[in-house]
Amino acid sequence: MKQLLGVINLDHELDHLNELTYFRCGAAVPFASRYRLIDFVLSNMMRADLESVGLFVRRKYRSLMDHLGDGKSWDMNRKHGGLFILPPDWNDPTDTSLGDLQHFHNNLDFFKRASAKYIVHSGSQHINTIDFQELYSYHLEKGADVTLVYKKIDHLEPEHDPCLRLEVDEDGNVLNIHHEKNHPNIYMDMFIMEKELFLEQVKYCIAHGESFFFRDAIQKRRNKLKIAAFEYTGYHAVINSVASYYKNSMKLLDQEEYTSLFHDNQVQTKIKYEAPTRYLESANVSNSLVANGCIIAGTVENSVIFRGVQVRKGARIVNSVIMQKCVIEEDAVIENVILDKDVQLSRERILVGDSKRPFVIAKSSKM
Image (cartoon, rainbow, N blue to C red):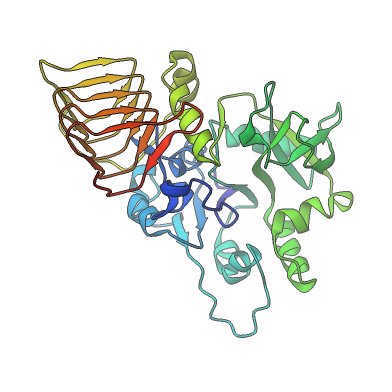
């Protein structure tokens, strides 16, 4: 859709996933046996056929750049438009911008060269299957300056605590933006607005010494803008802590939950050509997600297994997330554990975590 320019802003996404973000930003964290968190928002933008997408990153983005490459996996390796990875580059000695306004100020040419009239802005922590074309049509229908996306949550969880809430009237207009934890309308870090208005607000905020676009241009100035609210009703998960990562990974083992995320929703990721997983005669696998390229000779129950994992004979994995190319030696036992990539677990080693506080082993560890 040539009318929409995608902006994925990772500036405010801190390293809340502890060991999982020692060596990567949150958007690059693996999820659902073969994906990264960034894949879901990129795939949403791909399905809406956005001509260009700008990705604003600040720290620990080497892994992310390796994963994204030239954007081919999301059909964004184009002669005109496509995926633009825009790391910080502050070369202007007169620049006074702060926070994520630095990104927008120092990449004004990205916005000005784009032919799109509207900007759709998102982070990567809210996994969803939103239809951006539907959001665009709603925004035009409301005639709003900006439209914010929210999800009404029936049962609030700890991961929702840091999220902003939207107070919405019966006509779909935003009355207030606040942090009241008992309010069910979770703002999904996603909005759409006209590009020229967006750039005007960027310039205004910088001129007045502000730092963060949403807080200073929208939340603080909500009485000067017509703000609409779009209620999203599909699959939704917030990944902003180890506990929320683990819980939502385990939820995908439920068929209804898995179907809600992946059925009729094309989710793309970096293509890797690997052989199918081999299940040896001693293997015993139940209720698990297992990616390709694995060799399973032990027991796997209620777990998420990424590409290239080796589970030796006699090893037992229960309620755990095992990332790419881990090796679990004979007779080792793992329960309520997250192993990051390339972990080697020695023979007869036992690791047991709590179902609400899983034991996490950092990337490339040997135990």
